[in-house]
Length: 462
Image (cartoon, rainbow, N blue to C red; front, side, top):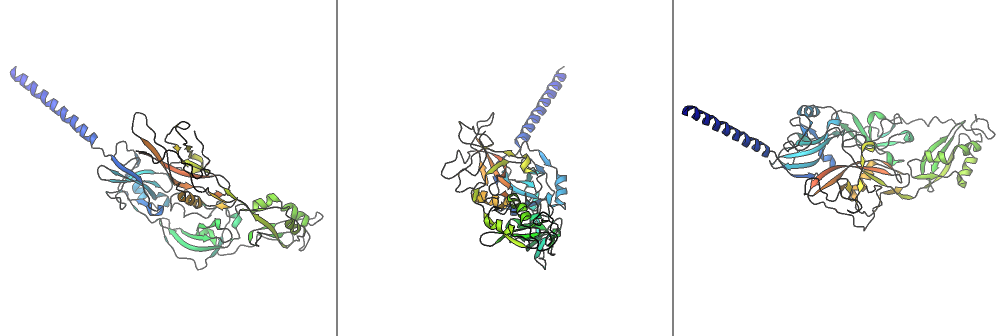
């Protein structure tokens, strides 16, 4: 019996001891999770933060060793992207986090916006390492021998871009349709190839319409000058729309005109004034001048005279005047990784004070600025123009005031960083898009001090 009691006591103590070890190990594993000591926005030039996966590390919603990190893209997926032949699988790094283990994680987004998360980046913030490395998304190419070119097939394909598609994050179309610029001479000033696809792009400038300037796929250009719009000198009249200084703003054709009296003209030199005046009305002028910043008035005495005296085969001059400088309202949106920003983004709310608008993660303090985003009414601007304004006005980073989260007494605020904008025409409301990053600590803002203007945005309070 004593022997049995000894054995029972021994086994009990052993079991207790084993249980204690198990508890200690479980606690140690939980405590071993890393914590983030800093997480900041990268400030270097955007194009210097183009990177590609090395395939050695997965992508996570948080730094991979931090509690709660979820898998965004597996190591296998990242390896496929590392070996990809598509520019869409490059990344743009935009934040860097450090952990208590001394490791560095970079937050990045794929060029097509499909993947966004943190990847292990080594142990130093001075250079990309670990799961990513710096990428040259394009490489210099040989300039063409003939640098004067034209759009090969004017329309909605092979338009100009701010950068060859997916070689820069959120590269966008400068113009969405080149039909209006079919006869413009384009001068090639730079050449580049997409590193992965090998496709050739030329940067072109358009002296007549600078709003076209951008990168165009080389096969979408031709050195052959277009024919003059199938002009028929027996039925048509050419039109030069000039400003008061005699500069041609736009050219057009009044086609298939009737001879005075009602019969379709069939001979060069036929008087077609009545038909010309009817066709060249104000609506016609507005369509022809879209994006130029000029307006046409058919009732202007010089225009009435030029049209009245028009004959088939003639080239006549119509006078246009420059529009006034106007403010261009901006609506600010929060987005994640959507390819169609204008449809899926969420409008940010304006924070005024705690009484009218309680602080939250989407109530942004819009600071005062010295000037609104303005230009000649109806003149085109690019996405780059809007980004430049927002950056110069220090609106590229917006913050919310501090707010509390349920179950926590700590202070938090959300920082919004500019990622893209839409092109448009001055005077018509446009859009700017930001990504959010929640941060602990004291917010740098509380409410705007009214010493400038806040008239640049259209957002409203909740």
